[in-house]
Length: 315
Image 1 (tube, rainbow, N blue to C red):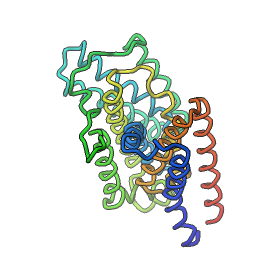
Image 2 (image 1 turned 45 degrees about the horizontal axis):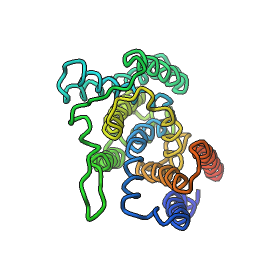
Image 3 (image 1 turned 135 degrees about the horizontal axis):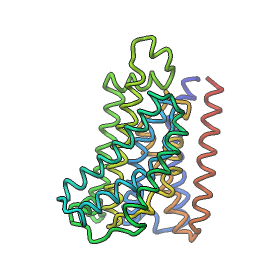
């Protein structure tokens, strides 16, 4: 790929975000208000954190279809343990994140030890997590949560604009993920494993260990996303996670990460998540129904994958 093409691939998501924001700003005077921009960030923070885990997985040429349902399971577990299980809120949060981390670890174990395809493994985990979520919650939302579980949904004023603590947490996590991928040997091993796994193995990289660590770390990210979802809605919702799988893949691909692994920038996934959030918010302001919003999201992911394919052929 030429240098100009690589620069365009890097700047493309940012230009798309600017173009989408400009379009919706022209359609609705409410779009660029501080309150609405704050709302977009709050709507994006759950998908944004899920997209961190999904990006790590896709960089290894895998995919995780279970992220939304595992997140829902983690949220319900922490809500149930804090309200009915007698655990302190801090321990309940730890238990919820622990459940999602174990789910990620099991995904990685099945992929690395039994050599099952990530698509099949995470498809199974998605259904298992959904069933467990419905069973433990009896398909009922968990309410009356203690304040610690909803703390990240609270806001602080920056000027006249409210900013949620959860948005700050999301940005911190992106900073950590950026540092991990750019500055550590583990990050370089992750890219090498996704780009050419056999060559990485022959060069001495423990590729199976890298994959296991990636899926486990992704599971931990889903636990943090579960806490953000609980904080934002104020309930442990067993119906959560229904659209997040598509949204996270869309965000990651729109952000420039290749579905074929080994190429992408974590901050691009944040931009991709913002593009999804801007489209959802802008279409809502224009009075477009949620069905058409899902349709637009589907079109976006097909367009992004098509561009990725074209770029891959051009290399």
